[in-house]
Image 1 (cartoon, rainbow, N blue to C red):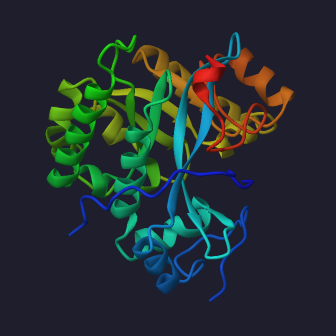
Image 2: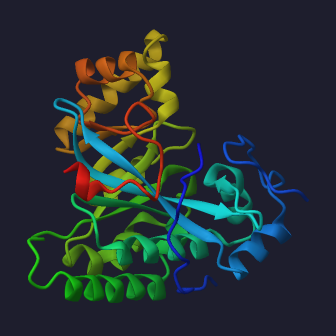
Length: 282
């Protein structure tokens, strides 16, 4: 993805879990894609930033929220997408640390409307101290909203399908205090390489984010289209809101509208950007 431009200052570290820099837009995967020492140094120097991408309702293309995405700044000021370093972070146990920093920045932002989607690994959400911090940040956000027109809890915790390592029943019990405060849950990257059905069955999921690979494949591969239609029927029966990821052109948008997806996000509308204000969009 392109550089998000001007970004927020780093949030304080919270909830600590028990080579050359890559340019923005690099598409490397695997634990060796990003140097471990450089990732640790970047976190130590608080060079992790949140960038935001707007989510739109498809039938009228009105903004309904945004997703907070992790970015790293190099010492030279270049921006590194999460896809370049998140596998390394997961391999060395630092993904919960990244989740903690980005959720803290997003919840401190304050100047937004609609839903705020925040990526969270199951390891992060299963840690009681992390849940405690989210409750504290929510209370601080509520204090900032006194006298405002905000009438709902905006937070949506996106559980990434590739990181489902925690027993879903245990996870549900741990998240109960947040659910009582109005937090909602989404399954991210649904339809990718791993199965999230146990989580869909055990957790009160509200949003189903459809993996961009399945979105694209459904346009040209009949069996992929059948899989997507099956997922949409399942979502309808469970009264879930579906969100298509990776909408990049009018053709994809029209296809997602025709097939019945509710919301979407992608480069067709906006790239992740700190400078984008959803308040102005609403």
